[in-house]
Length: 108
Length: 125
Image (cartoon, rainbow over the protein chains, first blue to last red):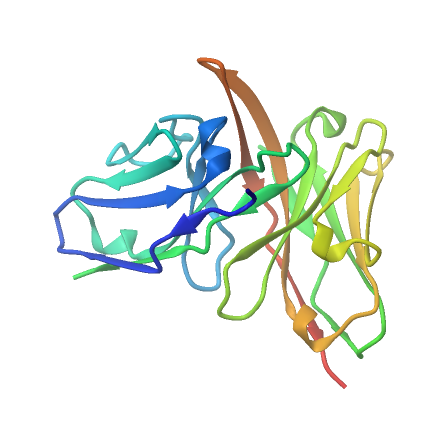
C-alpha cells in the first residue's frame, strides 16, 4: 500500500501532552519521519528514524513506532507548536515516497 | 551550512511547461539524492519524484509519469524539475528537499532533512 493515514485535526490544551498518529503498511518495514509546517513556511523535519530529533528541535518532541503505526508526541505543548504535521515514509514497493494527509494541531 | 535555494515564482498558461531550479550548497552535491514535493493551496504535501545527482537516476510518482522531468547539473550543484502540459490543478508551491537515509534495528529510514524555500507556480489563462 502507498497510503499513510493521519487524523485531519487534533487539539491540545496549553501545557498538556498530545499524540499524533500515522498509519500505513509501509511503516512495518520503514520508519516514519515527521515534519512541522507553519503557514507560508516550508516544512521542517522534527523527528526521523524511530526517535531522533534534528539539532534545534526541542526535546518535548518525540517519536515512536509499533507495527503499522507511527506516533509523534508533543509533551507540554506550547502555543508555537500550533501547526500542520505530516508523516512520511518510503513506500512498500521501494520506488516511491509518500506523505500522510497531515494533521492540523490546535493549541487551546 | 546545508542550503537549498530555489528559483523564483512563475506564472504559466495551461499547456505550457515550467522548469524550477534548486541550487545546493554546504555539502557534497553527489552524496545525497534530491526530492521534489509540491503543495497545492490549502492542501497537503505530495511527493513528485527523486534524482540521484551521482549518475542522474530518477524515480517519479505514477501520477506525473510522462509529464515530469528531473535533471541535475553537477558543475553548478543544481537540480531541476520540469513539469509539462500544465493545468490549473498544477498551481502549487514546489519544494526541493534533500534525502537522507539509514538503517536501524533492521528497519530502514528515509527523511528530508533540508528543504528549499519553495517556488510558487501559478497556472492560469
